[in-house]
Image (cartoon, rainbow, N blue to C red; front, top):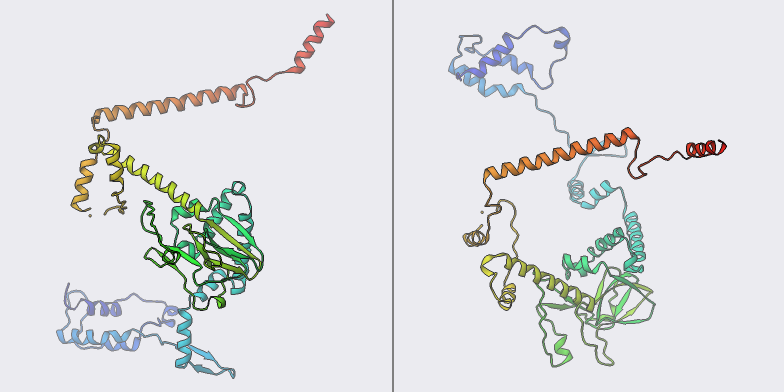
Length: 422
């Protein structure tokens, strides 16, 4: 590309451009400063046309000044209209408030959904009423849509999402129930976990909730331990947690709060307030029985064990292993999920190659082609046969499902009557 190509292009555009109409000249472009453009064209040593060259000095001058021909748009700063009609520039505090509004997610959500806080609260109340009505039904009478609705509502409860896995939610949402408790009654929550749907509850003790961490494993194992006293049993450990209250009588639990336990605990001693709570209002409580939860986990463990044993039996190296050894091996299996296209480590690659078996390895290319041709012929023959049968039925006026023959009972009765007359 020649050194002065850009300058020649501008000069050519100005000198050799075709004639334009007066209307076009009357409406110049707002993006070009034509005064600066004329000054560029007057630079000495700047040549235009085929075969001509500009001087180096003219080219450097042109390159320094050509940016001036482009108009810069004036930037209008935001302002707040004053009461008198005058324009008042924004102060630093008003600009800061506008920036805070830009980062307020609730404003965007409100603009998208078009709902105020009161409308959202009423909408949630309607959902809660529907949720309670569904839970009052027997589980066997609930429709598929209602079961799915129960599952979705349970997934929004923080005290459950921190303890249950996806499989737990699916299993428990099928048989979950609701209980109605009157004002002033006392619930002892050592055998179930409760979620408050309506009303308020006041704990009578520091320990009213025992949480279980949702362990990231698919294999269930229950380790029984012998504890010497009740105080030792309720001590905090890495796998369990409880809420300690300094002044429990001043704490009130509202909707969506939880209390109780998912692991069955021994009944407290007489006179003890452990896991004891009083209803401040008439309450609707969602209940998950600890025994039901244990049964669900046991079934999940059995299913998981069968899946792991089936996986081991698929490997030819373990087919002749005794059952006891395979059961010991299932405990050490860890599931890993790899995304598509993932670079595997050499140990995993070796294991995959050892256990992999070639699918249809006994077939040659010719066998595959023959099988394909045979399947295509079967498909064509079936289509041809269906068309012939359908055309025959249409010709005879036969509609499948309504009988083969069309009985003309009137003609038959007339024929019998004519025979009788003769």
